[in-house]
Image 1 (tube, rainbow, N blue to C red):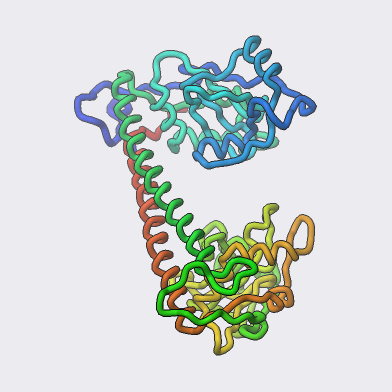
Image 2 (cartoon, one colour):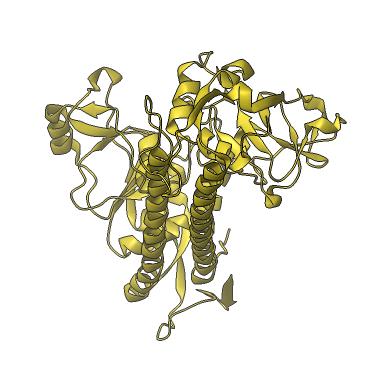
Length: 430
């Protein structure tokens, strides 16, 4: 990932025309590192100038939409700005606690204040292109140092003193810095464009669901395939399905091998399975074969660990790539009767109408629960089997496009990661 020629350190990949060596630098060579002045919680307001903590910084860094909840008054903001100064275009805000290693490059026109201590302020000096440092900070060489420094502190923090000493490599020629930044920025723009396309596809699917299923109080949907004219029939889910409850697996048998479990962490808002090395559990416990689930089985989550309750009642339709899984407690397997199609039910369970019914009747405070009886007592309108199949095929085709778009974004991200490994040296001297 880097080449060492005598005392010269250069990356594996270089743009033609650049021959000078890269230098080992520290963050304080190019930035004044500090934080904000303290703002007491009693000075927080409901309106005014946005006040950012680590959680808001994370959303900013990912260009995610979020609703800011904390502000400070215009008067206090003006006082702090005049007395201490504020970040300007090209400076960086860096998370010092919580989600470490997150950085946000301040943009022209940004107007905010930020929490002291939790968020570090890198004030740009001369000698480095701000856009180049944005990618330096994302590189493995800096990220490893951040987590290494945090690991030996008592509360896992990235401090001002540690930030100043953090090392990285930089070419002397600022033109080469700009060339690297421009290359990676173009790739980021491409990833953003494809992400926006993915968001548009998901929004289209959500809108289609609202039209292909009857709205609350309606007997037929707004949008129908032209060959279907019959009214939909109101039924209880208990007339259409049975529910099989999961097994309470014992933690003493959890392992990194054995049979794969399905847990709440494997559910998503989109109704697909999310099985990764980080969120998947295994067990060596022997249980009845009735708890074994395979591709084509439809599961429903009856417990939500998130404060927003966004996963409660969400379905998971197992696919071949998910593999066989064992049914865990607080997750139900749908056992259909003859008059209902699994893919149609998967679509219905993904609607906002069903989700609202489940969350409105949920019990518990920190952890929210639903129950088999609540699900089975839910009423829905059902079309003929042929129309069920048509609706399910429509969403299945759209899901395939969404999956392909998701994979395209992941490929671009992997390409960026590999490119960065080639464009930056990755050896720090002691």
